[in-house]
Image (cartoon, rainbow, N blue to C red; front, side):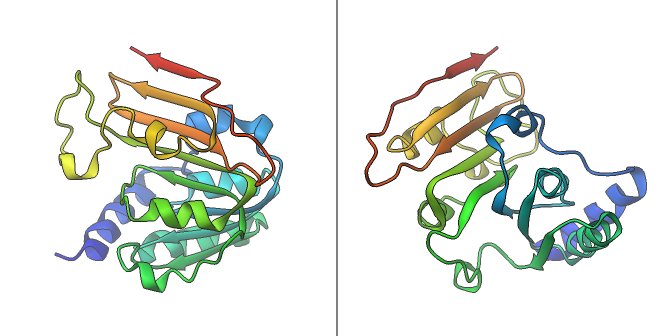
Amino acid sequence: MSDRIKWNLKYKVRIMLMKEPTANSRLKELSTYLTGGKALDLACGLGGNSLFLARMNYHIEAIDISDVAIDYIREQAKAHHLSIHPKVCDLTELNKLDLHRNTFDLVVITNYLDRRLFPIVKEIIKENGYFFMETFYQSPQEDNQGVSDQYKLKPKELLDEFRDWQILLYEEHKQEAKQTVFCQKPSTKMDVKKCQVHSESE
């Protein structure tokens, strides 16, 4: 079974069971930083983050492998008059992403890991723009959760990967086995501040 078929089946079930997808709770807590502009939601799923950000005055490009998910987001955006432009794309085919340097004020990735995206993210975010990511990591307290280590971050991996950016939030949630980063791309004239907040939740 292909990844697209697998995710289409999952999203069809989720659409039947839910009212509307919800945004990542930690992203919502960062709303004071989210002042609008152009945003990219990679591996957007059913668009909980995209819908939230569009209501925060962002113009969203939402990308996912599932045409079921993308059709759903398109319907929601039309029904609620939101500026979301969904696109079906397999993120493993990086040459088809058609993303340009210094384009986005914000890039969001949740529950998805492909390390080849990191250099792309660093290129496409504008100076002083933001990156939010949360996904599974190899927590010492985790259960397997059905996720292969191949798709899990190492401890402190995001902190190290974006060490040259201003880290506004970094957390490792051991019980959830989730790692979160929210960071700002420095301008060429700005000295990068090291981690301002490093909270580890038990």
